[in-house]
Amino acid sequence: MSEGELVVWSAAGPVARVGAEYFGGLGEQWATVWEGGVAVLGPLHLPEGEPFPAEGSPISRALRRLGVVAGAGEDEFTAMGLGRYRATEDWLD
Image 1 (cartoon, rainbow, N blue to C red):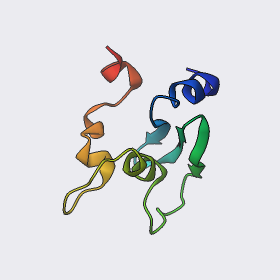
Image 2: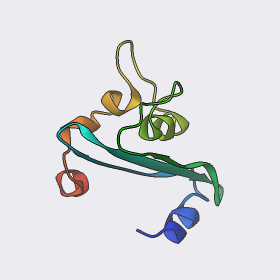
Image 3: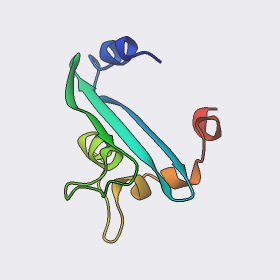
Image 4: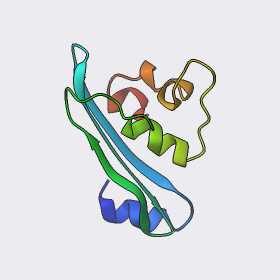
């Protein structure tokens, strides 16, 4: 999906594009959230080898902006159960 499609969809409510590429525990993340046709968070990028900032990873910050609430001892990524999907094809259907 294109950024333009996400901008259009965001007229009906907030939408996010998040991504991650990891191999062997090393990788990077990125995220952007749009609402009402404008970017309200990001684009955020966490390059490989950089520690997560105090406010959380790009993906967790985007999910939080969408209303995801993490419980004790977990982040928003874990709260959503996204770790069970290793590739887009795993959840797309």
